Length: 293
Image 1 (cartoon, rainbow, N blue to C red):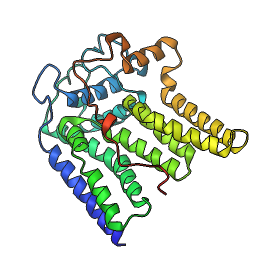
Image 2: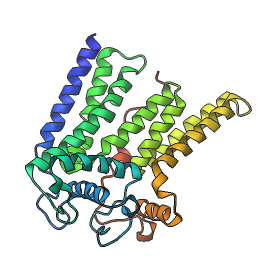
Image 3: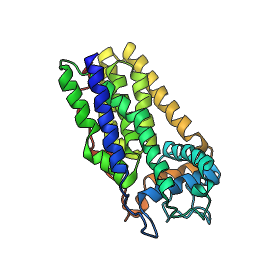
């Protein structure tokens, strides 16, 4: 009982700090022509809501890729579309095609900040709490201290609530993946991590440990028996996850290639002047081993 009381207090502290930071301005506010990542996320809502899905990643008169063109995987686009539907109900001007470019207001800022907080509450924070509660050979106070340190990590808070991004979504999915494979729910863990990759391609940084850990499980079970069955199940889960996320974009070869070009811009040397935050590359949660349960 005491553990959950303390965990609840930690979560409330984390939420308070997040919302306090969000009350401040964001990078790019009032600075045309690009207006910062806040505008990028708003613009993606505008594009996904007003254009057919097959035009989301293509340059056109209605979708100038030089102006915050969509360059994240499909799950980010679907998230933007979901937020856009809510924005449409509140104020259609927020996502009006062309005329909403650079839109700024206190009401819209409140809405955008709320979308980040809700994503945290639904995906990232529950994963952190469960992760800390399930750590082996730790006292309640140490588990609570771990949760406090993770939820108050300044890098994530400043990037998501100060600068403006949704890094907690991909990190949350990745952590759910860690929890899944640690609890021997390997298929659910694989699904969660596939969602993380399909939300932000930077989660590929974490893919090698996942791959090696699960492959090791298969070898341990024996590739001529249960291990082979597990390997096939994992392969089917990964393929099915990617197919479902990419389904609208794999019907035509050029469509698929264009999305890949946007995600991995090799033709411009994988460099862009307005670099997105590398936070997900180095914001590793304390997980020395995955068999902590």
